[in-house]
Each structure stands twice: as structure tokens, then as C-alpha cells.
Image 1 (tube, rainbow, N blue to C red):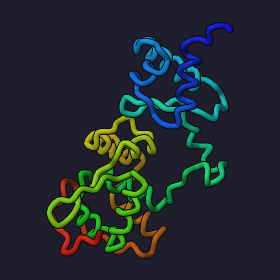
Image 2 (image 1 turned 90 degrees about the horizontal axis):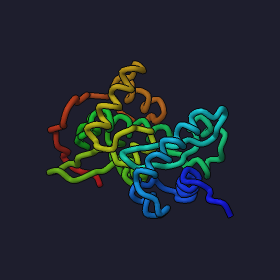
Image 3 (image 1 turned 30 degrees about the vertical axis):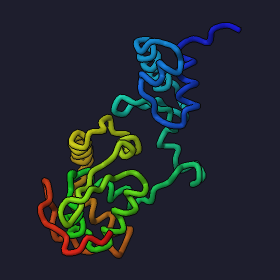
Length: 208
């Protein structure tokens, strides 16, 4: 059997992995050196971008590579295949990304007590990391958030900068995000505070 070529091997590994892989992992699994893997990844990404009507794409986030379905096709897939995250939770995650690192108490000030439920759901989905800080929690996005929203960065500060740039280009403000969540969920309260940096307010009771 003829050698399938480096590009085909790397493509097969991405297809079968079911998760994102680093260049070193791909090199180890393919018995190739990292330089060849990087070249193959660049070739593959270019090939997929040039294909018209292609259902898949090669994505790099924070130095890890994966093969994903083009997001434009998501509405045509059964929900069990899409791994859908409710729109209201996606927007809440976006709000946290916009302000991160963000105190949970500030999110409660913006959304009302229902914010506690949102944070628990986002943490279970792996989109948000919540770490106790005094009487409240410090919220920030995860690597999975970056992969899900196709952000080219994973470090929270860079994710925030990238997300704010995207929001600005699309005319989306913090208040607009809260208003859009409220439209989807009537339990979201009126907004009292729009923090623009690290929160300092503490919860009277951290409803975990």
C-alpha cells in the first residue's frame, strides 16, 4: 500500500480524535516531527477554506487543533448531534467574557438572583470557571469557551480583549447583552450595575 502522505495522516488523526490536539500530540501519534505536522496543518486549513460548500473546517485555538462542523450548518443538525447550549446561557457566558474576571456578585447585580442558576449551569457545561473569592466567586471563561466561540485565544485577558472587539464591531454593549438575556428569560431582573473591571461587591449569601 502506498504512503498516504503527511497531510492525510494528520487529517485522519483530527477526524478520529474527537477532541483538540496539540502539535506535539499529533507528532507523537503520527511518528512525524512537529515541523512536518505544522506544515500539514497549514496545508489542511488552507484546503478546507478553499473548498466550496465544505461542511468541515480545521480550527486552531490556543495552540490546539481540531476538526469541526461549520457553525453555519448547526441549525440543520439534530439537537443531539449539535450539543446545543441554550441561547440564554450562551449570552450569559458572553456577558462574563465581556467583563472577566468578573465577580459573581456583580453578575447578580446585573441579572438578579437567577444569576446563581446561570453560573451553576455554565460551570457544568464547562464554559465558565468559578473560584471562591471571599464571600463570592470569581468568574472567567475556559478553554472550551474559546473553542465553542471560535476565539483564537484561551487566556482570559486575551479572550476579553478579543470578545470586546467583536462586540464593538457588531454594535453590542454590555447592556444589550443583559437585555437580550432578559428577553429570553423573564426571571432575569432589571440591571443595576455594569462593572467595567474587576468587581469588588460581595454577595450577602453565595447561593451555591
